[in-house]
Image 1 (cartoon, rainbow, N blue to C red):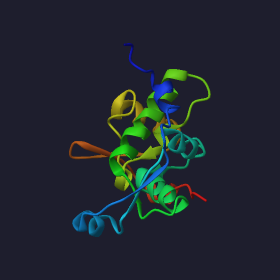
Image 2: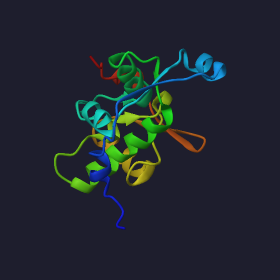
Image 3: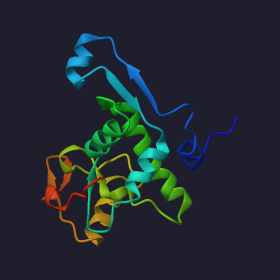
Image 4: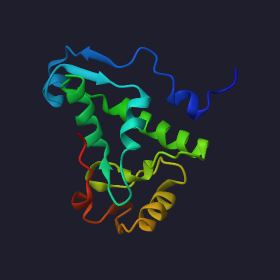
Length: 153
């Protein structure tokens, strides 16, 4: 069977969004409540597509926004990471009407090595928009990223 393209994966919402009730007390305490949202890939694409040039988002801010929107305590971090990666790769696959995925950073303004072209490509795209990328050890971050955050409403 042929593998699905990233664009097909992006549009495969299955039965999402789903809000699951956790029962493990440690997981509930760690995540601030029992209600975990699993949002579809298109939900991430819709948000990431709104970020204008010169502005940035973090994966955490997207997750927080989606959790509030669906009356959940938090959004599943694992599926969120996978789906943001699908958004990025589907955008590259299309080549037109790109979703500016490179403007979405990991926690603390860190670049995402899993995006198409890795750190180098994301750095190139961000610097072309006027951001400064700095290296700390083996990791890369946008300098003063908090000053450039896009407000999700």
